[in-house]
Image (tube, rainbow, N blue to C red; front, side, top):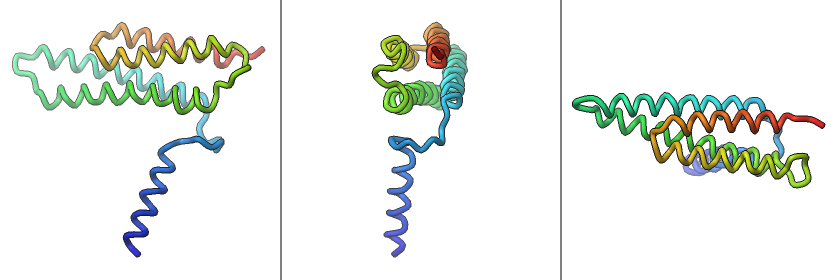
Length: 142
C-alpha cells in the first residue's frame, strides 16, 4: 500500500510539474514576464560571478561549476516559459501581430541559448530588451 501511495504521489507531482497543458487559469501573463526578467537578471549575476571566479589566482572550481549550472538552468527556464506557456497556450494563429510575436519569441529562445553558450552579458542585455519588446507587443490592444 505504501508503494502505491508513493507511486501515486510521484505521478501526481509529475503531472503538476508539466504546467500546464489544460486551461487552469492559475498563472497569469504578468507573472510570466516577471519570472523571465528575474531569470535574465539571474543570468547576469551568474555571468558576473563566473567571470570573477575565473580571474582568481586559484579559482574555486566547485563554486564556478555551481554558477555555470545556475546560469544554464535560468536560461532554460526562460526557454521553457516561451515554449510551454506562450507558444503552446497563449499565442494563437490569427491573433493580431501573430508573425511578429513568433519572431520575438524565437529571438528570446535564441538569446537564452547564446547566454548558455557564453559569458557575454551583451546576450543578456539583448535578451532583456527582447523580453520587454515582446511584452509590449503582447499587451498591445486594438
